[in-house]
Image (cartoon, rainbow, N blue to C red; front, top):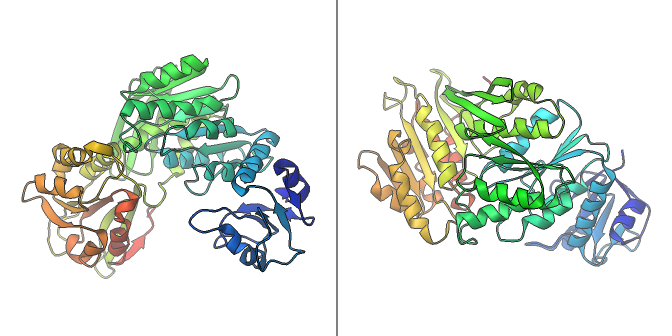
Length: 475
């Protein structure tokens, strides 16, 4: 089935097509390009024009370019435009205009990708749902997600992020969602914002592109919720509030029980008792928000509450794995991979999951199973970053950890404030701890690895995996 014909793409972008072609998909990376894709030659770290010939050799239907690159034949299928990124935006807007899909846009300091994937899980059971396969939430990721949207989609979920002021409004206006959700507002990207309130003001801009009679789904529990609600009032947007203090979707109880989270919530006269197949209070709050979004989209929240148990976190965002270290004795450790992102709010949530875990005794070298935290720097926190790291030592859930290893110059401040008996190893960089993996953890342990992507603690996750082999979570 064709996603873009040369005529439709040329009409959308105002570009000139050198030949007639039909594209089944849209790609910006030759490494993942599929035959039949339209290759978009974006300029980023590398200029995509340098890869056009390779894309065509791999079977691209055509390439979206600003000029014919050297080495590309004159008869090659090209869509030539003045600016490739602007043209990608044009494709995104055209794809949005031709669909009748009900669209949700998601933003927040924490939880955007998890919520997007939860929504994909539940909405896919109720229709044809389109969402990006990765965290494509910036100035090129949002138009790319839209440009890939099939015209016959029933639902679409668009993740929208930001690093600086003024980035969310144009992306929301491009997506034109029927429902806009703010998961939470937390200390993230404070290097670019003067305060938490300033972050909330930017997050509130997710509502700026809402369709007439659109709905904003907002977290009622955060300290900046009034800023979000005030923006909705100024825009004349109806709101649905979720959380423990949620006026519309109320979280009654959250219980972490072994490997699952059991949630009790209510919406009007309807009561919901459902579970997630992963532990985490933060996941529970987001899940109730997902039910609110599902309802606002016109889908069935009761069915969604049953289907959401099929969701598990993406890699690096709280994934739970069992690493079998000895097949003969079936010795293993439990790994909580949360190495993709970190700020004080998300770290506190992950530490609660660790605190609720149950290590296994009488296995491994140390006999007593331990709760082990391996923590990398939390980045982009602004001028108070040192104090924010040091303050984590007072976290009651961290205090329940048996051993804490730290990575990075900022995490050294936390490490120094730990009691001596809890203090594990510290290293300036993650690679320094990779070779020490066998001495950082042991069979029977429950191990949390958490840090900002730039801290590269994902290298330690990989090293721990290599101590054995993974057993699928559902086992």
